[in-house]
Image 1 (cartoon, rainbow, N blue to C red):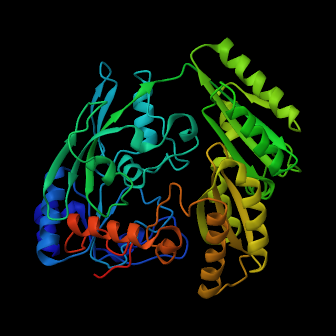
Image 2: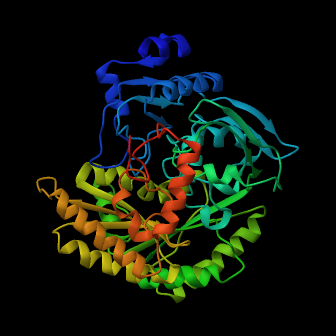
Image 3: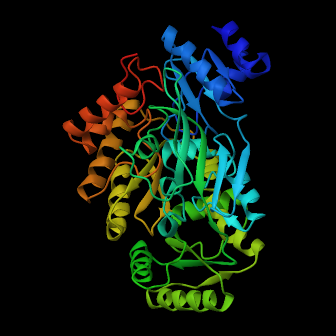
Length: 459
């Protein structure tokens, strides 16, 4: 197999050294790791096609990989085989300002694309916290969102065309620089969010927007989660339309302060929000954030801190962006959950989750997108503690039962991947799962593309 892959992609793009393979044996999901037999790094769509034809002919499992930032073990090569990394396909092929479209290869890092677009006064709104390392292809595969999803939507709202390679190696070009297209079934949106199980996306046409001229961030601490939630609810009932309303519970902020070794304002608060307002006119943005400040104080905010310059805004966002690093360094993370409920249920969700994990002698750190009901819940134990797999499973089932009972779902933007397979039937009925499995079998009759993800694998 390796010799064939070298002929396709070149020896410099084929990895078999165990030390290097280890980097591709896991993503950012705790507790999941499997070694691939080989990693291939194609540089063009035609090479991806040839790799898939080889894999299809010989029934070799292939795990597509972007930046490796997945939080559902979606990039873990559970059946070994080939990891197909798109990290070298990073070209911006066209910036079409007339049509407000950009054509890119899928391995480009999201932050890098954003910096290049900004030179043309354009931007791509979805902004996962991992944007400095996640890729556009991974964003499409997971339908990534991020803090700005509340105002601007998620990845699928911006993809108008793709080049996809199917499991048998067939290359298909779908869509185009089109804002409307109902020519047959919407296969593009079926592939978006399919977690690399239906096709490998090598290129995308992306709708972009004018870069906002003015951006201001507010850090607003509250005594409790209920006050923060009521504040967010009222703001969203106005015409202001903030770009983001983020949330961090007091426990996680205090932990981040410890990790950063600096004093974060109002560490005594049990709920911190970050509100981002953007627009074209400085005066209009100022009036918007002043009104938001008034609403915050009405709901018991301890203060309203304003960040207008780039450095001040980065400092306000730093605790939110450092949560993952903090918990990895200071705790033993056993599960990273990505829950979504109707916005008004957030206080109830968090309270019930905290009571739930106490029974397992664990701690839960909640944060995320309070403006759209998407709360991330990282469950950790002390570095010196242990918890059995059966206890983790039992705890996760209780977490999902709580979420579903509040009208929610078990994942908002991280996907099912490998880690949530045992719980899929809690969230979807038998008919829905049956239809999804049939769709998978039509695209991938040999079940070689990212096998063992979303559904139990037969490979």
